[in-house]
Length: 311
Image (cartoon, rainbow, N blue to C red; front, side, top):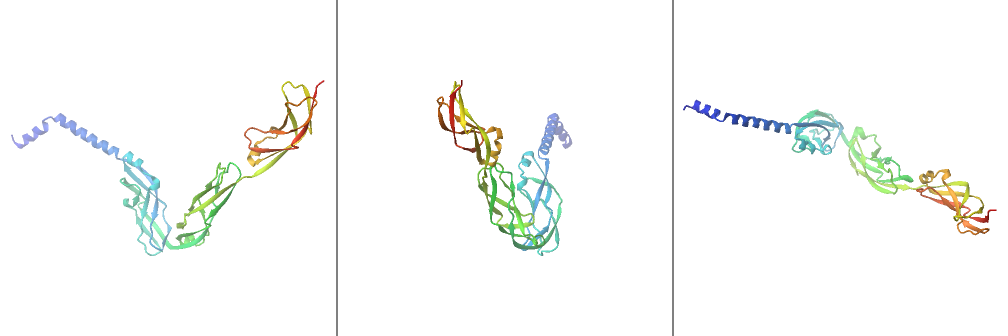
């Protein structure tokens, strides 16, 4: 048997199984490619590491990077951890430089293929770096406390910033993150970041904010509130009060006092046990709505009570 016939025999022997194996192999390769060919884009920040004494006057803020891989790999990507880090060659703090961003410049996505970067080339403009001391603006307050008002005290009041001369030459103040006081009832201390979009460095980069929740106590008065009596069950006599009307004052936090409607305040005297025709002095109590956190003051605090039989 010559070599051609032997080759035919090898190929044709169990050709159905060989064809099936070839098809299965092709299918496996296809499935593998499909499982690892998912692609997602991310806008990630550009971080420029310039040389000593050189500041960045202008640069693109972000670059779009397309990542390709399996679904599990792409799910592990964290946009907050990624950045395009580029290092210009410039040594003179003037002019500009065009820099090509390479896959190796993308940090925070180890093992994930970067298939496309847009734009691939960015232009960085340089300036002379300066340092100066600026005031820290009073942090903005978000929301309202549950009671009282907010007073802020913060330190430090000045920080040292570094950056482009042209951008910082007229800058006298820098802001911070806001402080959220929504629903707060007690004073607290919080450290907040200094926000400097035009600066490359801030020292220190945080301030300590003491948030004081100052409670405001107010008094609201109701005059000519009729005195009512709580009587012993079955009492059929007549009850009289002197004076028949009192003045009621509610003292508490502004919001608590404002919850109490005008017709919700009632003055009453506990007359249970008062003997017919008896004359005595009893304390006046105030009924206020359930849940109202206020203190009540009555003038006069007691009234003379007289009881008698109906005829």
